[in-house]
Amino acid sequence: MKKRQLIIPILAGLVVGQIFAESESPLTVVNTLRLGYDDNVYRTSDDAQASAYLQDIIELSFRAALSERTDLIFTSRFDYQSDKEGNFYPSLYAVLTHSASPRLMLQLSDKLTSGNRTSSSEEGRYDYFENTLSFAPSYVLSPKDSLSAPVSYMIKRHDDEVDYQDVDIITGGVSWKRELSPQRTWAAINLNQMWADYVNRDSTYDSTRLTTEISHTFNPEWHGNVEAGVTFDKTDFTDNVGKNTTSDGTNPFFAAGLAYEPSPQTRFTADVSRQYKDSNNASYAGETSSALTLGAQHDFTAKIMGKVTARFVESEYDRADNEAGGGDTTDEYFDLSVRMHYKINRINFLELGLRHRETSYDDGDHDWDQNMVDVGWRVEL
Image (cartoon, rainbow, N blue to C red):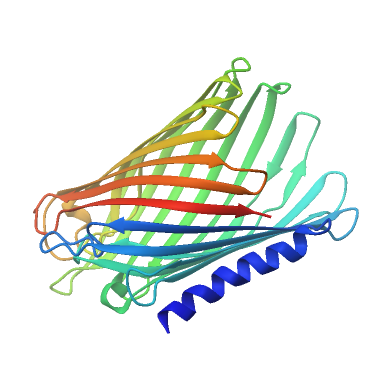
């Protein structure tokens, strides 16, 4: 039965792709089949279980002009991995854009993602999904100025063992953007409000963020952007003795990105951020997150391309936000990914991937690390 479940999506992706490849079509299909090895499937600290696995990823994308003023974009990804039961993760994204007038643009989107992750309070690997419905109107005030007011509603759901991480999030805001130099520099002022409700815990998190943002293209090789400001945060929760606790605070927000393209074949990126946000730890209502992401991509030849991505995240938790009566603590996460691609012909590619991940906790109870390697065949139709 397992083999049949795997063969069906593989054949479906290839057959459907061949049908649409024979003529012009707004639909594109990418099918990737990988054979890999994972030395810690369940991401446990002790008695790690290793396993070979077969992974099949089918990606579909569709773009259509419904009218002269209305466009539809739809993308999907279906990921099946054979290393454990129930390892099927669909992801869907649809965007409907409509020009109500030469000045007013309306955008409605829905994004569903699913996958697996670890928990800061429970050892192991758990499935999750999240769905975000967004509406983003934008209005052109002048040739240099525009105004947007996005709103969204997100739900996150997890396996029963970690359902205390389930949360509903409503966000809304307004942004004024001004072009300072044509095609080179723009600046914006952003005001955002977020309400988070942890549905299986008596806990909420509210945040009001005010930031200024600037983006600048220094030359054809260098581009950078910076966003900085302040957030006014409030957490409300019931602690382990039944006492309702409210914590208010003002925290800085900072995010910056830099891209360097010395040639059409090479690209380097760096992103850094620090913010107080809703917590991924079930024992805390909020956390201070610091993240650094570095990336490099290079086309060695017309057929060979390589890509490296490294990400480090540090999450700090304050005792004032603790729902279980504990103190300050810190989690650290590191993820390194290396992928090589070889182009056989217009539609066929070979892949080689290496990945290392590790997480450490102050208490050291369930630190884990994981190494994965895979070889793959990708067909783009």
